[in-house]
Length: 622
Image (cartoon, rainbow, N blue to C red; front, side, top):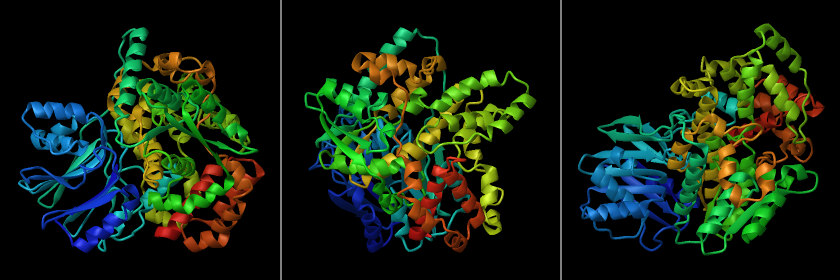
């Protein structure tokens, strides 16, 4: 796990070192450089595999190919054996060299098919004078780029690009529109005009001063008709292999343990696969926020597998970490779970260098409540549209609570979209500021800057790829390609790497994901149970109370904090004077949001948190 940066053609050594230094938190164990008139590479290393021998940048013995690489190739031992059978000779025990040698022998696009892991890398081909960039299939590792003055610049984080004197900080108003819609900025856009996010499962080749970008992998649902018992057994084997591959490490490793099915399954499989005691790490909340915590369930799993367990209690003052959180994202990011992972990663890093986590289980096996909503839509759609519109109008009057119980909010969201097409309903469920709210929020000048940009096109483009699929398969695909990489995986990477902790995610194993695409939706969502087949597959491993309890999710008591401890911050950041001075939003629209939240009419806690984050980002970067 590392931080990478570079440019083609090459650049001044001082600038390269300044850009690389911005990534020091990602790789505290060493730094390395490669420079020529054609290309410059900088690398910060977090040593995991072959600690003494895996330094980068790394060049092939013939001098043709040079690589900088961030991530892990989990099947590197099998790749190494395949290459040795062809006559390859290795100088190190690192996965970096296996990646580089495979690239040299197969070529970029063909080599990508071989890699099982998380990665973002750049390879320079001195003979073809071409730079090849690639990002892993699910988007676990980040990679940003921009073109300035005929030069391609790239980096693991935007802050490294901003360290180059030719890269301006110009606000991308369309990205703000995306952020307010989803509380994240989806690729290829970033908050900075002229800086792009290479999408997951894509490669970029820079040659003769121009870029060519192509997708190399996709996960289209293709449900089969294999017997459920056979699929259950195959799922168990796939998950076991995904975990075992991620136990490869020359440094201590452990696991995040929330007490949910996903993380508990991983801890159970780690305990079965390893001769060493598993180290597990959990967090909980203090008095007044007990229904947000799963800590007791995590303890039960820990006791069952005799893990070496550490716990962290989260307090409202953790919101003081918001400036640090924003600094690590470089963009506004509105999911407050990032604050929790920031602290959990800090605790975990005191004891281990690598941690496994259960992220992506909900996207891969349909674990969110909204999937029930998609299924229920077929019954709602039996009623005349006029009746559904009348229900929607009445439902808009339902008040909400910010105390953590979301039943009324979910009922309102479901019913107020009764008159819409189900895809529009889904878009509303995963959105925050609606088109109407954004129109009312923006000043005339900012609305003009956004222009006719439509943030809905992010979802529409993905729906179009799977238009032939059933509704549940469609929304699962869209979540896998939007919500997962630009929300969960993004905060997982930034908040873990803020503390130089490598996070490994078995549920992002592409073989496991491809297997899940063959499952009929009814084996993922059955009755009241989400992730049905996964529950059955891990039933022998986990206590019944872990398998049967409702999903809680890892979320802070944000509504409570905003009503109490964070109220002064809202008064400061979202005052009429501050909003007016920033010039993006109408003060009266922000004030109305605050009043509706305080009165209990609407749970606008995430909306207000998003505005707080955006103001903090502007103070640091605008």
